[in-house]
Image 1 (cartoon, rainbow, N blue to C red):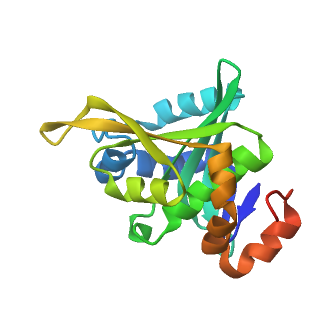
Image 2: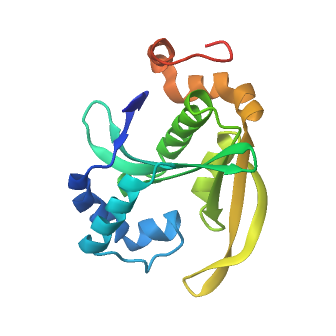
Length: 204
């Protein structure tokens, strides 16, 4: 498990599928997270997906929970891939507890995924995708140092119209320049504890 401030990232277990079934069939949640609000799944489909996740060595999937209460609040994923000889990680997340939207947790989760990618897995770059209307996700990604690199035009059809898909990325050197401030902003008084437990770079 990976702890980052008040958040804990743990593997998805079979007993989590009941909760995922609830989240993955929430129209609004999937509209923002995947721009596919009609992509409903039944338990049998989720169980089949779970078996595929277990076999996939390139992708890490997590339940994100609060350290103090152990309450599951969302999911996060990190997929390692190589473009030529450049190590890349595609990251993504959603907050399943919609009452927690807009409270900065998406940003904290994103910084944690960057820490895993750059400080533990030694990747060269990270990338993420988001649909045009998901302004909260864009704001969180850009606050973490991601840059919008381009658009896939009219890539999604939601609520009666076509929307672009935006591509964001951040290079290792770009993250390291922002790392100190990002850790201070997201960890606050838990920064010292985090620094003691993990391999350190760029002054920590």
